[in-house]
Length: 245
Image (cartoon, rainbow, N blue to C red; front, top):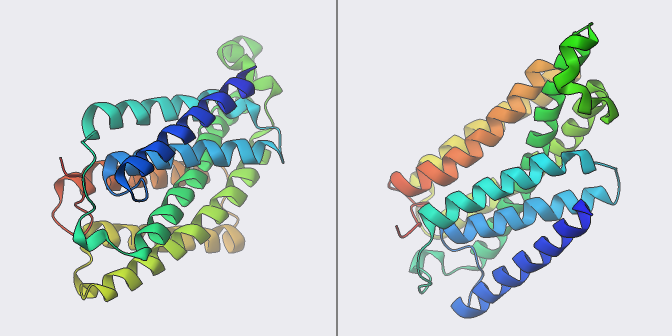
């Protein structure tokens, strides 16, 4: 029933996004509100797609709860009237760069949800007394922490691949605008985070990073995505200041 209602909500969200694109005669991610709408749509798309390959229904509460919070913040803080696209964004790279960034965010969000559940599962597994684990008893039917960590790692790899392409597309776009050396704080922060994620992959492969370090990295990387979207894009002057607030 939960999955069926999620599919119904996803369908309504897809229609709303498509109608927003029709009303504006462009792709529906040309400001922060539209990017949030598209990003949350793709997060649920990734979740439902992965459900066809693996039974991750136990993540539904976390994923849909996160979507509800993000949509609420976007609706109350970032919602603006539909307006013509700024000149700087009138490029085919908007379609490529924006869509891949949204899709990459979807994979990072799913990895974030898995890591939150993994932290709870690690806590439950570390407690020996049933009396101490009564509040976490619902996790008995959830896979072991090691299984969750491996799944989150594979999903995160896909996100890193997409985010690498996003950065490449952003650089090409910035170069076409003649602003390669002034691509703003968001691009610099994302490039730093991408390098950190690559170091994590290397450390995991060569030094056996597992458990808590993996969890907190996934949580911090998704927090960085939200920080860039909700703070840097709105308050910091640069190429990504397109919120129109």
